[in-house]
Image 1 (tube, rainbow, N blue to C red):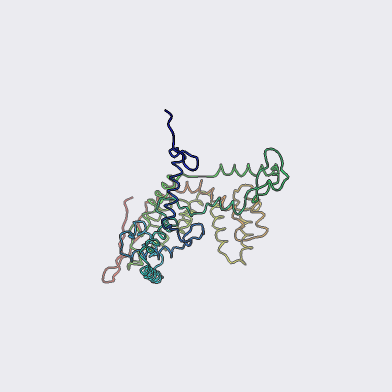
Image 2 (image 1 turned 120 degrees about the vertical axis):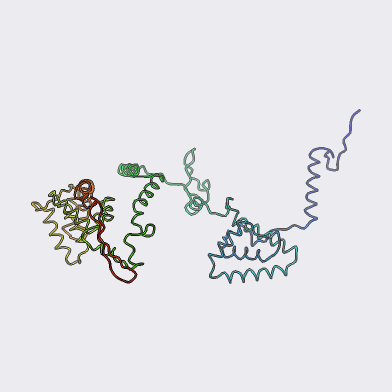
Length: 402
């Protein structure tokens, strides 16, 4: 017996899949037409592409704290943001609070349903512009996309050949002219550039941290903020022994010990320079240090005296047949020769750098290993002056065993 299917008025079987889908669509449309549809206020549309300020966010968070409702309580990240904004806008926080209070009063006058709708819209707006930490901020502008929008890239030619029809090109792009092949000089410049990048000195962060720690440990003894000085700090006590030691020609043991940290420690200490020069004179090789000191002295002279002093240094150390000739490389010598024609404070800069490197690698190392330095290191400590509570000065000589 043949089974008959009921057929609707539109010619489609009532129990067919198409008819079932059609009835469900009708049901959805009927529900949409029967209920009230709520759309977001255009003011909060992200498509308006305006970025709210932090003061607006502060007003919003402050307003939520005024409403004693569980659904409006601040989350942990929002409470942290409110505290941070309160510190940032401390000077005008009273104005922000008054603005939030005024908005809260206006919201209380609204209908209950309207107030709930506005609260949900505001929360959705700030969830987009101030998302939860760890979430993607969809309003951030991609720098690459922004750059492409400002400077659109040229479209490539079609793989099927050139297209002369203007309508075939994108309205926002124009065909790019053929790129000129790089010249030999440009290629050589690129090779030199990348070669220089390969030769650059790079350090790992672990090595940098080790170096900083070693430097800190080395100088911790000389840091008055970390280690109490001996003698005491004259700015916070009545003991002036520190100034007396610094003015003395006989350095203390701690001062001499610091010279071994590097050549810079010797050169910036007046007594260290004198002892270093005395050692080099004993070896008949003091011309390098005397040249370096003379160049340093030129940099501090009045400008009217510089040309004369530059010529004197040239004649003493660098001219042919100079009485105290120094050994510099040809590149530094040629550069210095050109600079002396127009004498200035830094005419000998290249030669001075070269001499500094020579002293650092040769004469300074010999000075630190010499018996003269060891004798200074083991010498007697300076006489210290200290005042008692009655203001009397007592002098005591403290000696170290040889």
